[in-house]
Length: 429
Image (cartoon, rainbow, N blue to C red):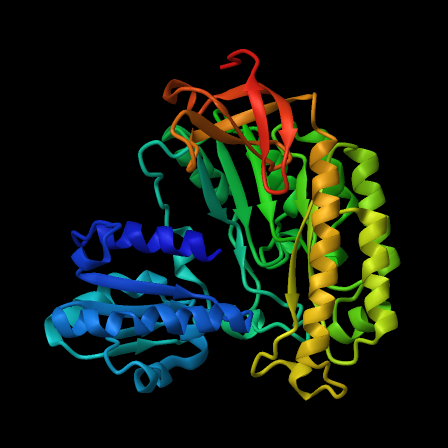
């Protein structure tokens, strides 16, 4: 979501004559788009911001801003931590960015704007792809109504708001006209898309509509909530040809006691049933997930149930984290905190087990042929190109620039933990 928010900011600022640069020394405007869902992301934002202090001293005209969830959370308090800041704005105010920048330029005074609005006006900003881009993000809804006890999203992004289906379709058509082949539909909980729009049929209908747009070859979506993953959505993996065989389905814990305390409204059994349904409808589907270890009150027995669930599902990939307290969430007040040492031990167990499962799932592809959408040259070798399978695996193989943007069949010759190695079979087009 933050990546797409940043793309929309770039689009808005282009109208004021700003262009992006990879050299921070050349910048006249720096905006940090932040996340505060976990402490590590928050500390990284502070660290990056601190590096700009000396730059501001050398270039007094430099405008430094901070946006996103951390800006929404702290607001004007940020000026105490970083007095060289010029601009702080929250998640509902991206659309006002040109106006706020103009004010800083003209008056030289600070601006802070963290108001929530009845509607998030930036949702409909079309960020056209840069030259050579083949994939794009499309926000279909923002906010969350679930209020999981560990999560700050509803407080910093607001309540759920879905865009009108036709507006989304029109945006995807425009992206396809500019050469986009793959779209990722975004939302804090895409499975509940449409619930705030009168007469909207829901996420499965949206998937089918986007699946019929000429020029779009692949559709992905994130993130899903297990309790809202309906049979209609699951069937889309068989009924919508362009829908890729991958789903990110956060489970967070394998213990029903912990899941209940998290306010997730499903059980481990419910989750396993969803996985079974997905694999019945789409046997080759890649399933990734999130797991939090060390949630308040998590016992050794609770943790073992998480390990047991991992063994049953055998995820293709996993984002795993130690629980970190977020101000304003219900879990801050929970008793029986788990020590940092125990959290660290549990996280290491989860990550080691997941490495085993990921390598196992990747090795199962060796010797087979996968359709790979080529994104461009590999970062590590200019003789290689890289792309992704429909199941969202990265593949590196020998190739030339002329196949960028094309879908080609690649034989998988070697599996690694984070990528696959392959050989081009023949150009598919």
